[in-house]
Length: 336
View 1 (tube, one colour):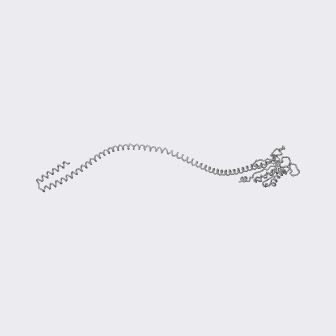
View 2 (cartoon, helix red, strand yellow; view 1 turned 180 degrees about the vertical axis):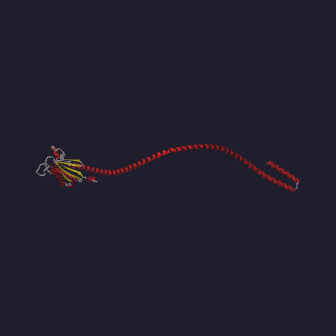
View 3 (tube, helix red, strand yellow; view 1 turned 135 degrees about the vertical axis):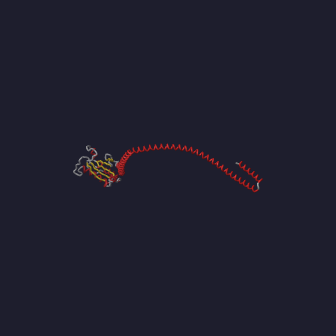
C-alpha cells in the first residue's frame, strides 16, 4: 500500500515538472490543484481502505467464532437428538409402567370393595363394642363414685368412732388410774389392820374393801365395834379427799338361819341393817356426803367361800365397801 502511494507521488511530481516547463502558469496551477485533490482523495481512500481492512479482519474473526459456535451447536444438536431419543424411550417406559399401575389399582379397587365392606362391618362392630364398654365403664365409674362417697362417709364415721373410742379409752384409762391410785391410798390408810380382818382388791374397775364380821360386829349384832369404827374412819378420810368416788355398802351373811323373835328376824334383815350401820358411821360420824353412799343387803346369796366349813362361813360373814369412780363422763359419751 505504501509503495503504491510513493509511485503516485513520484508520478505527480514528474507531471508537475513537465507542465512547469511547457505549459502556462494558469494551467500549471490547475494541474497543481488537481494533484492536491488527487492526493487528498488518495489519503481518504487509504484511510477508508485501512478501515475496511480492519472491518474485514473483525468480520473474519467473527466468522471464525461463528464457525466454532456452529460446530458446537452441531455437536449439541447431536447430543440433543440423542437425549431426545432417550427421553422418548424413557417416556414410553413410564407410560407402560403407568398402565401397569392403573391396572393394578383397578384390581385393588375391585378387590378392596369387598374388603372395605368387611372393614366397615368390623368397624361398626368395634364401635358398638366400644360404646358398650364405655357404658359399662361409666356405670363402673358411677359405682366407684358411689362407693367412694360411701367410703368417705364410712371414713368420717370411722374417724368419729375412733375419736369416740379414743375418748372412751382416755376416760377408762383415767378411771383405771383413779382406781389404782385409790386402792393404793386405801391400802396405805388401812395398813395397820390384819389381812384376816380386811382385804383390799381391785376388780371390774372398782376397789373392794372387804371387812370381816369379827372386825365390825359381834355375832348377830348390827352395832359396829370401836376397832371397826377406826377402820371406817380411815376409809372416810380417803373418801373425803376423792369426791368423785361413789360408795356402795353391801352386807353379807353365811347360810345359817337367824332365829330371833326380835328384829332382825333373818339374814336379809341382818345384812341390810349392818350395811345401814356402816353408812351412818361414814356419813354422820365422818361427814362423807350421803348422796354418794348407798346401802344394800345381800343376805346369804353371794358367798365368797364354801358355807360347808367354819372358815368358809367366817369369810362369807362380811361387809363390803365398793368404791367406784364417777362414770358420768363415760355415760355422757356413750349417750352421744
